[in-house]
Image (cartoon, rainbow, N blue to C red; front, side, top):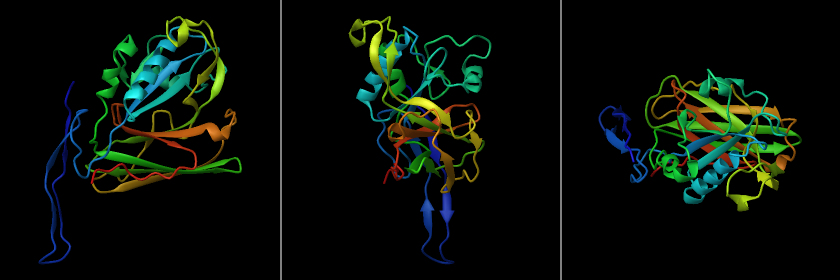
Length: 275
């Protein structure tokens, strides 16, 4: 287990000349997994980006590990990024490949925690590595609201800040669940069957509504809220719009995910802010 510290800024808000002053004192926010919630901070999720393929026999091992992580925590968000000779191949993968494997071909499976941290092999024995990146306290929180109708997506992504940030970027994904196709399986998981017929592929990346490495964000100071609206057609590769979901996350200048949130279609979220 490791500990990361952040500080809620000292801020003085003067409501009148002589009275009704509100003072925000500096508060140390422990972001470790077992830290108690601190007022003003946000629930912190971990992002698992799973580079996978239906043809990849070792990829089933990672799918099993993700299932184990999600069974242990509701703060785990996963994205399956398919690559290669695969019906769910994500054709725009190049920027992500260049980020995680700039000097070599993209060998599968690959799994990254919060975009840049390698999930240690064997992943199913290192679920705690992913869970250690979750917390009750984060310096920013996200809330998504969407309407999907008439072949169109109208999505609002809001980010609220409990401290000052600079150089942030926003990434927004469209995912699809319940895609059934055989999965090559070299593991003993899922009954050891190879291939697994009609394997249910979930959280499959279908489109990115932003640059894959993120769009620059403004208004990222303490006590501010930034909002992005996306009004787009449902991606043409989506098989069933009712099985879509959205993932939004914020990365820093080192491409490390600060926080992430997933939402179902036609869901209206509030911030997961500690009272």
